[in-house]
Length: 142
Image (cartoon, rainbow, N blue to C red):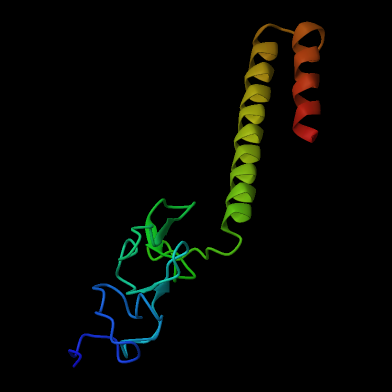
């Protein structure tokens, strides 16, 4: 005779935290789909942070906000960024931010050089300040 918590398919005792039998893999719950463990493939409840059988993590960290979300989630549960293509989008955003920061520094440098050249009476951008200004302008075009 089996108890109500035993698997209806094979009679094995239910494993706490699983939605499917750990032995025959038959669904033992009507809660819907769960999170399949990437290591042992047991179907865990969505709220499990780790597999009830092998203790493998069932979460992943978001590359944007660093918060953990379920492996079953398609988007970060904290910042809503999609996991699909996240590494590429993060790299592109970081590259763009770096480029914008570099341009800002170049613009500040040109302003400082212009002010120094004007105050030193160089005016026309000749000499050392003119050469430096030319180099910075060339870098800004790249």
